[in-house]
Image (cartoon, rainbow, N blue to C red; front, side, top):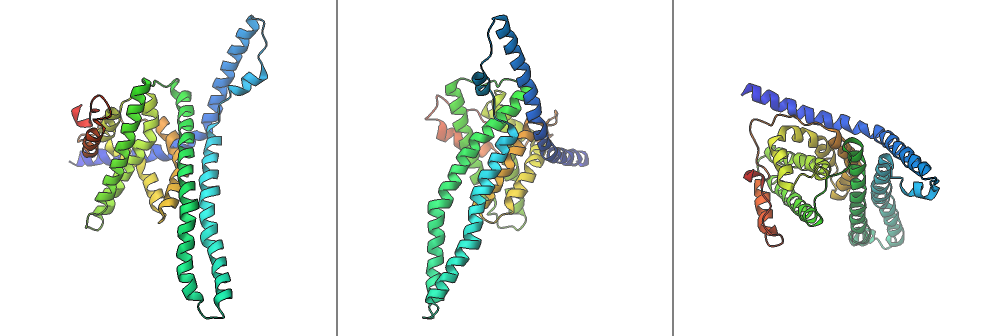
Length: 319
């Protein structure tokens, strides 16, 4: 029992180390990709010279790919420079200014508190409905596209061309994976309601850590051609490592009290975990005991998904 606990703790520390140190690889990805592109460009030029043709500058420009660091900076600019900054300006500049104006105008009548008591919630709800929520959804959609670019660039650098399935299978796999993630997030919210102090927080953090690890590694596994049940089973059989890998991100995103700010922090930091997941090397030996924490949501997802595909996608229990 002592040996099992020691190995489990070592795997958790291994995952945390890979999550933090693996993100430093972002400074080398662009340099490695430039070397690969330069070699490919030289080969193309040699073929063109053999054919007595000259390469066109415009074609070379179109073949250039976005850099990983450029995409990460775009994520920071959108989520921090635009979204988060707008929240700070509204709550710390605009609202106090409007309160001062309201007090100045209604102060003579002595009704400034009454006026501001209904005016502040109205302004907050209006700002959230017409600015915060649309911008939050837009940033999520745009960040998701940039996340995919970062993952593809990192994968091609280290493993070459992605091994994607057929289009129909790809769409079914993607939709089923998103459904599992939504259900698992709801499961994490349910366990956080356990009326035992400390236990509910531990269970919620356990769920969110595994979910964050699944988010980060899924880009690599998807490009490797792994199906949903394979990805879920691998998480469950190596759960100590993935618990440690997703724990730093779960702790960082749990600090803000606002859901929108937490989502902003996630979108800003998550690209680094994509890089870490692409370079990480989980332990080759599976854990001695498997935690089938996804089994319930996979079963529910199979029932919900059964009518939209030819048959249910296998759960991790069926392996």
